[in-house]
Image (cartoon, rainbow, N blue to C red):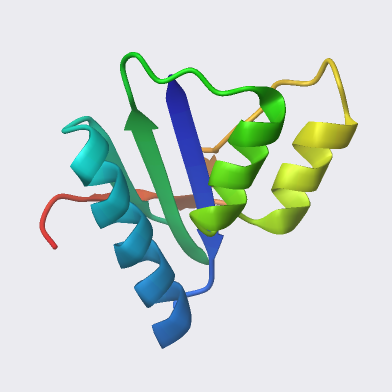
Length: 100
């Protein structure tokens, strides 16, 4: 399963949220990418064998600090692509973080 988390903000609380989510996911899989965006962080994890229902997926995303508006829209707007993260937004290209 692919799980993507969009953490908005670069303040201390947002950084703590990012680190907590990153290290939680690293306990489940080595396939975790961390990206810095203009306004926060993106975490993308590939967790083989993990199967979650729609409700469970929403719970995981919220628990890991995903943007609540993004989670709500994914839940309400059926038929649209879910868990979308952009590589470039408003001219800013996200940067992969390779060392923590």
